Length: 243
Image (cartoon, rainbow, N blue to C red; front, side, top):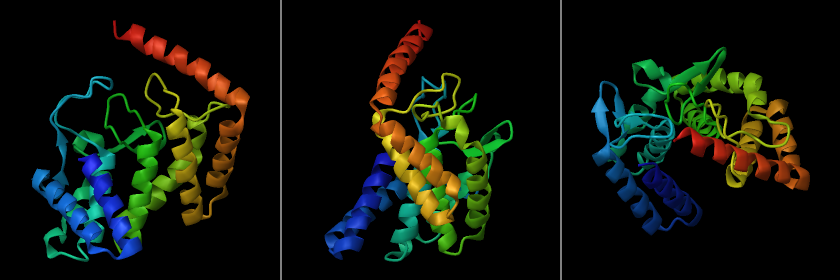
């Protein structure tokens, strides 16, 4: 589902850029597929994964916060063009407002409150997924959704206070799970871009400071070498732990 949502959003962006309805129709096809595959439970539209996440020890039936957010964003745009998607946008993002213990994706580590891409136990707090969900909440807020506006303010403030948890002094972390995995080169670069977008939205200098700091890590040959060595150690540890 997350791949379909991403592709649908890409096609919609292409439509916005070109006004070519081929892209809009492609985006609508993705949206209808997501509607068909979603499961309505109470006031939410859920995409449940029928397979386990063995690394995070999640049983089949888990939901992905990123999928819920991106699917909701796609419906938010498509309902402007088709009544089929009316109301599905808010149903898709509903899990973002409920804790993991109640079937949602809101979680915490101490006083750090965040949204889970993977609602695992113990919490994983995957950074890129959280950042994307914040951007989706902001998009909903811009379209008059008060619950999203309040949630964006709350979680952006939480991230601001705890962003240091993802900083190793030479690279960014992918998540805060018990292994605390380093971000890949691609995800580190993605973190930089997403923080820049958060800074543009909020004007909060802390996001800009970390964006600049992580850019310096990216450009530093010493930091890249430390990342490479540490990543090998991390992979070795994970491999041995699986035995």
